[in-house]
Length: 146
Image (tube, rainbow, N blue to C red; front, side, top):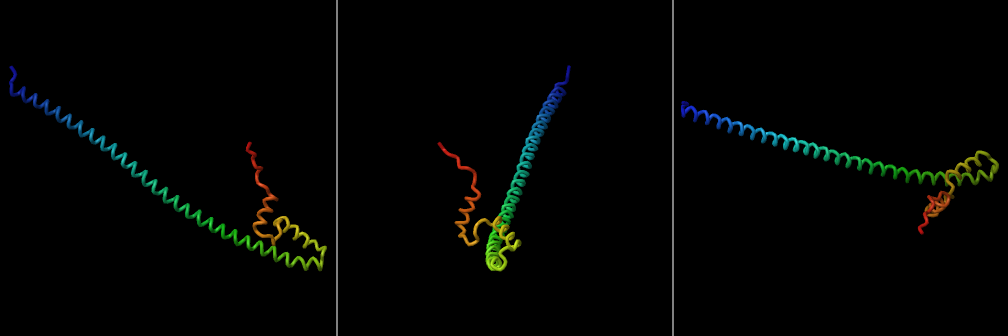
């Protein structure tokens, strides 16, 4: 017959082995869950960092765009004023020259160039010039609504 103490020890060893196996499985499962959670947190942190960097870049780009637009608007105002002054200066000089030499081809060519470039009289008020340019270059045809 088998020794009862040996049988009890063997049963205890099997029980201890089963408990150790279940403990190891539990720890492995916990590690796997923690690993997945750590991956998700790492991914979330990377996404947040990317999002913050993107917002920073967009803010910087918006600022560059704003400064560039201000620069362009300033240049446009300056060039518009220069064009008006040059056109008016030509008119002031051209009138006496026409009286002296009315058939001068260079004077006629300069006048034609200015007329093509600036079809509106230089002394016209700005709002009238806008309206006249709209007549000369109409937008797309208006759509009739029935």
